[in-house]
Amino acid sequence: MAPYKNETAAKRTLSMEKLQQILLLFLAFHFLKAGSQVFDTTGWLSIDCGAEYPRLSNNLIVWEPDGRLIKTGFNRKVQEKQGLEEMNTLRSFHDVLSEEHCYKLPVYKLTLRYIIRAGFFYGNYDGLSRPPTFNLTVEGKMWTTVNTSSMDGSPVYHEISYMSHRSGEINVCLVQTREGEAPFISSLEAVPMWVKLFPKLTSSATIHLVTRTNFGGPEVRFTSGLHGDMFNRIWTRGATPPNCREVSTMPADTTLEIENRPPMAAVGDSIEPINPSDPIILSIPLPPLIPQVARFVFYFSDHSCQVHEGSNTRTAPRITQIYINGTPQSDPVKFKSCSCKVVYSQRINVKAGSVVNITLAATNESKLPPMLSAMEMFTWEDTEDHRGASSITACESFFTLCIIFIQTLYFLALEI
Image (cartoon, rainbow, N blue to C red; front, top):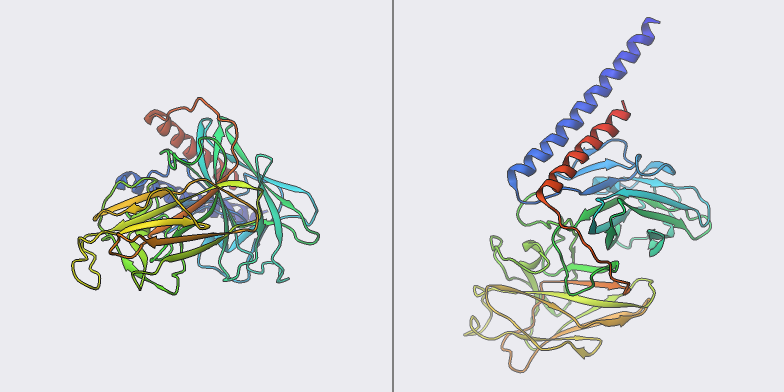
């Protein structure tokens, strides 16, 4: 009996040490956040699917395992490691056609819009070299078809902006649609949007992200510093057309209040044609979806310190006309030095599998070439408007933070 008691005591000691480490990470995260007052991550839900323990990432995001949110599936590790730690584990599910596997994401009982992002990295976890294709749904409605084949070996992300209506939870489900292709998931994130973004899109419909691109610079994610995305959005690095070059248009220390709160790291660099008379031409392939309404959001930045070839370019006008599928979009865009301009396209109807062609061209009056810093494209279906949004007070924010802390302690204690 003595060896058994010693072994049990050792396990308890090890469990307590792990709990203490986790609690220290949790407290350190909130103290750092309170000290910086740069970003408010209250209510963020970052799920590292297939992981066994919570962890604190380098950018101070607390990633928690998914065991308490779903009861089916198996924890797996990928064979081909990836730079993002959350992509090195995943949860796979039974190979059963039409079977649903659902995550119940706890959210505030408020009328509040969330950014929900699901991440997938196959990494040949099963040794079969056959990345599966399956469906993703939210609250019983079709979200998207997930094709986990990645041309460049990068994670595959799908993101929506979803309005919760006081339900207290959001159900995200994976559904197998092909024989022998069991679904899996690597990460699942939900970020409350305390600030109203994209007021010109739609008030209540689910908004699907098609692309969010940073031109002229690297990929931009959330960081604990001043230049990351405060809503945990991912701005992928855009390909520079062969007739264009990358230019710096905003100093790194610029502070501007820009519509939709894009990170300065995304608007600080741009692309422009090498030949001032050439246009910027982009093609956006659309994923499988039902016919929907779409709009683009363009971000332009220009700075008086920019020096171009030729004389008198500091004060020369830069005027750009935007065309989508050959149709001009409203009035030409007139730039102002030391500023960032946000332009919405007109609504366009899009079909599955089609390609949207975008052209930015200088007008006859412009003395400078067109320039583009960043771009987003969204699609959605119009739905009935839901009224009665609740405002969030400071007391509510403090109360919910306490609930998060208590829930974290509870679920960690269950593992001891």
